[in-house]
Amino acid sequence: MSDATFRGLLIHTAHIFRASVIPGIDLSLPTPAWQLVTTGIAVRLRPILAEMDATLMGKFPEVEVVGYCEPQDIRPVDRLCRIMSSTTLAVGAEAGEMSVEVEDAVQIAVGDSVSLIGAEEGELAVVAGVEDNTVILNTPLRRSYSEGDELGVVECYEVLGVLDESGVGHHQKLVLKRTQA
Image (cartoon, rainbow, N blue to C red; front, side, top):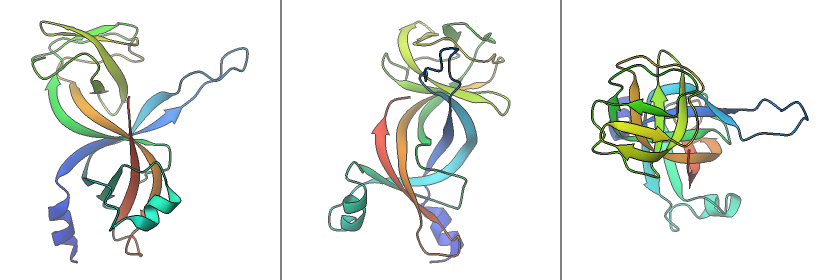
């Protein structure tokens, strides 16, 4: 398959996040904070098919979805977050705030996973409430965002494995399990 043909099959857009853990003073491990690694990559996701993916199912019993992309720095345990819809921030938001004001919240619902993407930084959160165009988050913002930055509703997947599908770095096959932000 040519590179151009392969790229034509990549119909979804996703962000990649990597866990960042800072132990507490008592050396306890907190819930990881998800740091943006790569934004806007082209991928193709499909449900696992027993007849096509039997060997994957043997190696990764939790597998639910298979993804394909061009070579990227994607590692097991990363989060691949497929963008389902997006809007922009109507006003900036400061680190520590629990809500953001968006241009259009019509496609955002309680329980949705969302990504906030600013100038080369981003984070994941879960929507705790929506009031008009105000989106209330389940955790405080870890960084500040500017008017016009992106808030996307995303489907998040834990990367269970990364395979060099056709060798020589042509494309990667991702073994994924659905998860929340």
